[in-house]
Length: 288
Image 1 (cartoon, rainbow, N blue to C red):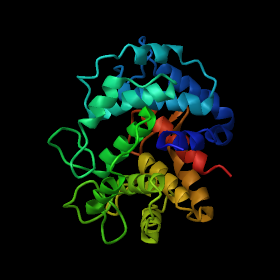
Image 2 (cartoon, helix red, strand yellow):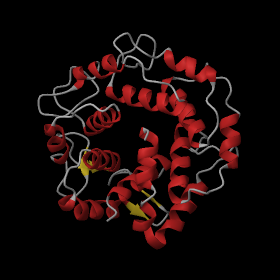
Image 3 (cartoon, helix red, strand yellow):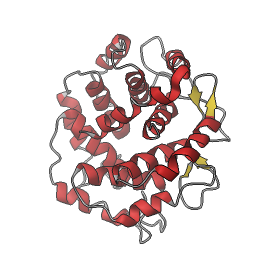
């Protein structure tokens, strides 16, 4: 099962946790759709990146939902030359979400971001990172492309592992970050590589007393993205979740708003579809 489908499968459990609040979430998602069918970013503009999260959120709530407008928007994007690495991966992912055939031009352009070391960069002369590798692997899966040089690909990630068991996105950083670590776990699992038990312990250590997970050991507060990715990684590693569920549910409840979505963290004032999906992913992992 691909990275995308694995997350979607978990997020589809979220409606059981939402109960009577599920229609509010659907209403919020509907309010974020622009005239073109794309989902809006945090500034209210139609955006391909936010569209993939909007589509997955709708599919999580209702696998049979009507996505005709989103299909029309995605089909209208034929020129891939202006797309940066992130948005190219989003286009490839969106076409897979909507069961549209891969674009040959998009697949060819994706290869331009592959590095000699086996990893991926966001520009031809850029640097490798765990995040880039996560996007690159997901795009290969969604495009139906084989991940060639898989040993080099995995080896390229070793530079980002820290002695404590965490991973980061910059070689010079001495401490890990939750999201980079979770991405590394997902990649290793997809390619059947063994992950150290220290990584699971490191991830669990990032849980804040409130129940949410911090982005890094020094972060003052937990956030929704780190919580969702940490839960996804810990679950994938088979880590015991019994003591994690209740406090994490309390944290998610503290981020909920009657508008039908969740704030990214306690200091946030803007809602968006990206964090809506991460809330669904987190809730799915907390579903008994």
